[in-house]
Image (cartoon, rainbow, N blue to C red):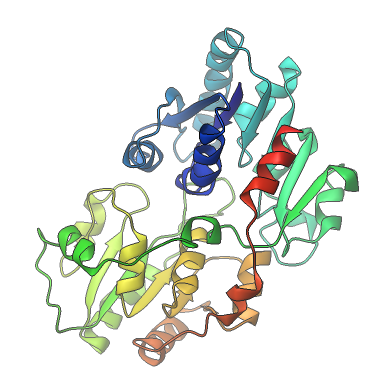
Length: 351
């Protein structure tokens, strides 16, 4: 049995085509996940894709102490549960709890990760906690072509343990995406939406994550002015709780339900995001994209260098770029150089 621990929305999206292909091949799959107050996206996405899963443990919240306590508790629950199943190997996107337990129980670890550093060079003072706690434990390490091998090797792996794929992660679930405007209208039917105006979709940075120093104000300070300047609809996709966003930005649509967000990203005239994966999705779909992320990763750098996305550091830069880029077209030809071989990935997971 192959154990997948899916603890982020991205991990569900990334592994969905891989898991479904494995299931077609009658390979036994076991999925675990976690939830928690204000952290429900992953479970909602698993339900959206009709996956069977076991909910084990919770997200720890914003403090290091609460994260650590939740992590220890989840590992203890894994110890009780996993030993009752015939697990051949673990597959994950750098799930710390699952990797620790699998390593302790002698279960081979197949790890995927596209952001070992919060930096686009080899500055190891920027190594992410998830990377430090999972990559050294990996039996096999999968990474996109934009991350240099020597970055992974510095975590203690040999070159023969490193497997490279020729695409940036979101392409695996976007390659067969078919845009549906009717679906967009269905998403927005309960909101006041003026379709004669341009639309800007906004996504916060994952400020509760251990790899983000703090909640940076740049995005929040600029939204009101951007809305007035462009006379646009503003749609905010909450990262965690939504109530404070509704109070702070009463003119905006704050999405409450979990939807296939890619349709909104394709529909809008501009995307402003503090994340990583969703920024890649937007620019891969040809939508002008501004990153307000507090750092530049290896894949961010590739997208910036290939004019798929722009990065800003100040409120003033953000407002200027929003006015300049809204409604423009993005040349997505660099993406055509990428290729996906799911069968090859599965073969390397299993062998």
